[in-house]
Image 1 (spheres, rainbow, N blue to C red):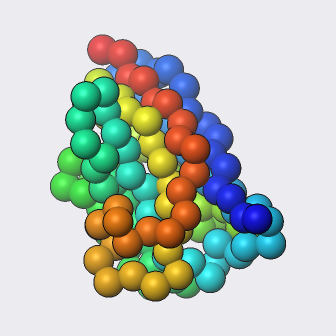
Image 2: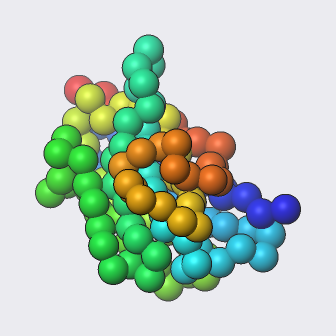
Length: 125
């Protein structure tokens, strides 16, 4: 059974950078899926962060991260990255990657079929 596995979270100071990774396992190829990143801050709802369509043709970002975060499909097999630069305390959240085989609105969490376990990102001021 396939799954998405995160790595790369941690505790950093404001202004720092982090790169999150999301790797697919179980015979699934990330290249066959639309991939998204979401985050959930303490006491808040799950929010869209970034998404990359199948084969990387279309990329979307939330207004809060546009210009600071970048989603990419890396050279490592079956891996998607979220490069986070100029981190702010308000970026503190659990970050999740998700995959969808068919999707209409890449910003909607209910359209994704597969989810990773989440990774904590904490940004101190």
